[in-house]
Image (cartoon, rainbow, N blue to C red; front, side, top):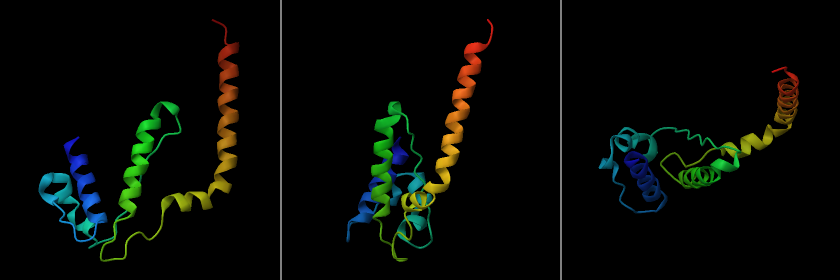
Length: 116
């Protein structure tokens, strides 16, 4: 996608000090110019998948997000890394994940028992 490539180029240029940032490459980068340049607060959410089938896309998404975390604008750059926030709440998430796993197993057992 051309817009995402242009956004990646802007993010790369913003992480390098003194580098020219070309926001005119796409409509997306023109819309995000104020957000990326540090004139306002911006949140970037990287959606990743635990599936091995999506491994390559997940790695690329994490690399992209890591590059975005290195942007230092007028507001001082990254305030909080979402990964660190998730680690803080992992204790609360574990029981939910275990319950979900148990429910999946119960559904699988019911599907096997169902008469055809």
